[in-house]
Length: 114
Length: 108
Picture 1 (cartoon, rainbow over the protein chains, first blue to last red):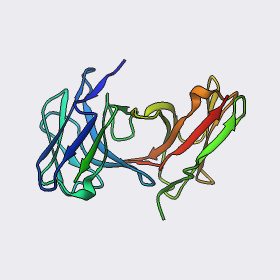
Picture 2: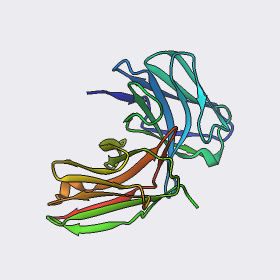
Picture 3: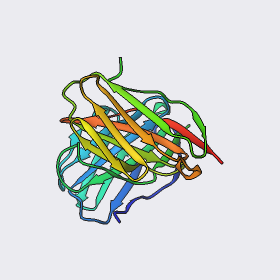
């Protein structure tokens, strides 16, 4: 089974802090994604990556950046955390194909920005 | 108007009931349709994946796509308490759009 591991289950940060969310997958998947999940809004794509050092903006990239230095690891960076970035963050990976390929998700990081 | 509309529920049914979960969408270009199940404090997991119109069955689960009506459904037969979860529809062509999810509780 594919395992997607997110480093933190819960995170509390202060406004203005730089925040790193880490994600590792163990099945040699090409594609990795970062989503945020908010009640009533569903999952919204922040950034995705098709290859090492490649990144593409999703629907809501503002205030975020990403890093993919190794195939198995995809990091989401909040440059200066704000309260409206309080959310559940989900990392996902897929083997091949575009954004329509079935996704394997991690268990999420619930981030609270105070 | 959202591209994908999904009734958030909550939906509560007795064990053994047939459950119908639905999504509507506005983009006629969507070709790929998926259902994910998300247990509490877990990430979503893929339940069903279909391409274009038609039905797909997997055990107690049946996914239906009606592209003419822009309507997709997930049916759960003989529902079990272990089916209690949030169900997310997802669909797309060049990019994927998720519904907000329907929370389902199956009571013993």
